[in-house]
Image (tube, rainbow, N blue to C red; front, side, top):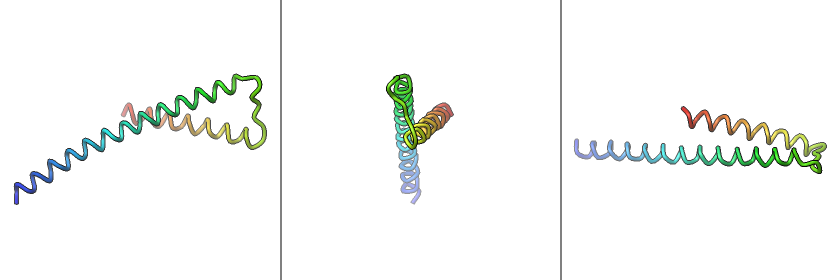
Length: 80
């Protein structure tokens, strides 16, 4: 019985390690995507021909705020 209990505890520790590694990959992916989206949005804002109006302006600003939030959240999780 104790041998089976030790085996299940070792298995749990291995799965926790794999889960933590997977979570760090996801956090890094979110950081990379949010930084690239912020860079693309900034380059769009610098373009003279790009003038968002109406709903497009609202959606563009909300997407910038969301990407900035995801970047801050990912940075906080990464440095935790």
